Length: 254
Image 1 (spheres, one colour):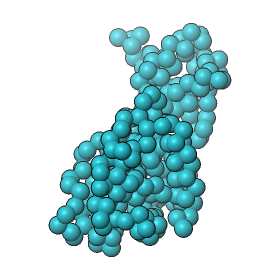
Image 2 (cartoon, rainbow, N blue to C red; image 1 turned 30 degrees about the vertical axis):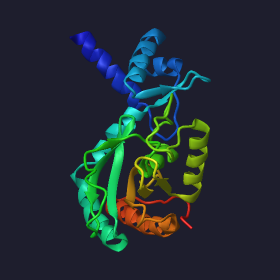
Image 3 (cartoon, rainbow, N blue to C red; image 1 turned 180 degrees about the horizontal axis):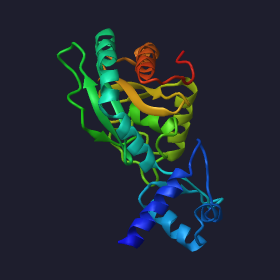
């Protein structure tokens, strides 16, 4: 039992060493900090990599925080405070746009929709609260990928419709466009006839903590509406961020 507790404590010390964005640590540096042998650090780090708490850079062999840390951080944001801060703003955006508004956070290698407000139309998109989706075919998933919350998916990208992006090079290009303009879109990529636009909610350091999306059927959400919807969503996401003590914003949506 004592050895188990000691190992768990050392794992936490490895994670606590991260103090700023983009930090990397090597085995030797961690061993010096903890005062243990490098082989011990290597075993601990390998376990954390397997669990997704760390990622290893194959070129430098150093370690950085992994997607599981983003998921847990997002879950803390997905608490009552985030939902309370977002609900009124989302309802207002739903009235302004006439479409369905969703708030999504990372959950493992997927995005979890934690809140939804429906627009006034009879025909909507159904209930997505509590639903998990893959990242590449959704606008809110693209936001989390483009703004560094989630790693680019490895391996094959499942196809959901004829318009789903399944090529990694094309996905990288799409994410570059998202970063440049500050918003993402999905045009019949998850389901035929379902269109959506999403923007990031940023913290005071400019890091994306959640994705806010506007979604609706193709016949109402024509592509030409996307820039205007993105601007409206941007203002809403900013108001949510301000209520949470957040600041900062990405590129302009024009």
